[in-house]
Amino acid sequence: MPKKQNMKNVTKETTMTKDKLTPKQSRFVEEYLVDLNQTQSAIRAGYSEKTAAEQASRLLTKAKVQAAVQELMAKRSGRTQIMADNVVTELAKIGFADIRKAVVWGATPDAPGVEGMEPNGLNIYPVALVPSSVIDDDTAAAVAEVSLTQAGIKIKMYDKKSALDSLGKHLGLFTNKLKVTGKNGGAIETSEVPASVRLREMLDRIAPSQGGEQ
Image 1 (cartoon, rainbow, N blue to C red):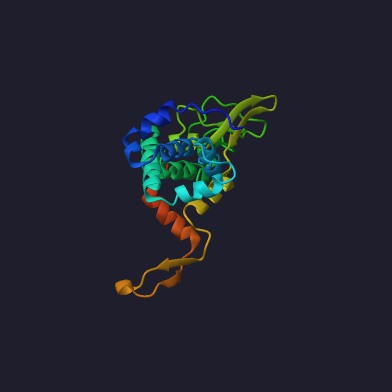
Image 2 (image 1 turned 120 degrees about the vertical axis):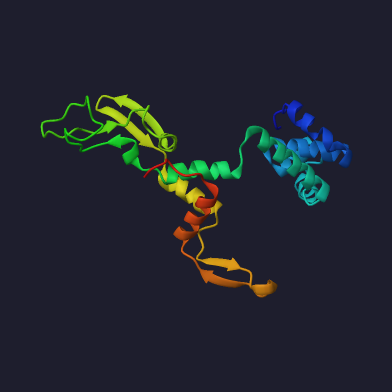
């Protein structure tokens, strides 16, 4: 049996919408907001286990149930300040991170910003971290780990490919066709638009400038 959920906060959220729903429908909305599991939400709301999946699907087609779910999810999103654009922005920081902003390697003794570092026998400085007081916020957000090992300092960046894959899926870039509406509501035409161009255009609209000067 599913674990009993603490519904105190969710129940408080539904106060404004209960007059629009039956008690059972209100309970379903409360449970649905817990884990977004349609069938289990219906069961916890008191619907029969045998017909829970069908009942949940039917409930979520009702306009007043949809409105209640959307209203409360919007309130939750605003309260925690987690919005789709914020997620895209954070993914963009990882996907477009440049490791040269986090580490320095191959610098010569007269290079700027390497004071206090000891060169090796080839008179070339080894890999060194950009100080935490200097690294820009966007690059720092892409760093997953900094640790000291027996071999020296280790830095690990978050998975760039995974972040770019998530961005592409979120923005619908993995298709070569872009549908557009014709003049005066006419037939829909298609045109070839490179995915890289579409990604950059969307990020320019969504994400803030990454890291100042390049």
